[in-house]
Length: 213
Ligand SMILES: [Fe+2]
Image (spheres, rainbow, N blue to C red):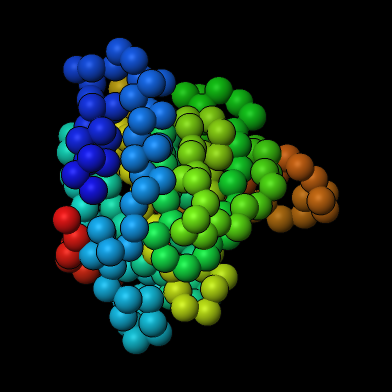
């Protein structure tokens, strides 16, 4: 994990945005090697013994990037949410997850201010520990829902930059919005209309300490 931490800071440091693409690819490659042993995953967190559907584990809080682990119980999910003007890399370290991505169809810097937005539904991905990391950019796959479909729970490591809460010019702290489909839309349409909200009535997390290297 030390290599991932170091590479994440190098890639997203505001002082060093030269060679971003090259550094980003090195980060993705380093993340593809992460194992649940390395991040000290407590397997008991994946069982149905806790009340929250998802447990959050903080790995790194840096002014330019965060690294977290999310542990999901069977059939639980992180509901549809966005990552305003952010990049992200997701690596599954335990179990199987279904990831439903949506991509913005308008300029993402405008969308941050909109309450209703349209997004293109991508083909869902089923992702396990042997699969490559899943990447999101300010436009592509920026909205996603992540669901645990396996019986034994699942966990993934999430690198996000810039962090939620970091300042967006003329807007303030970078928010996380949940997305709710607007009713009565044409069935099977590739473009879906959503209303955004900073609250979700059915989602919450608890947290656990990081036990990895
Ligand atoms: Fe996310």
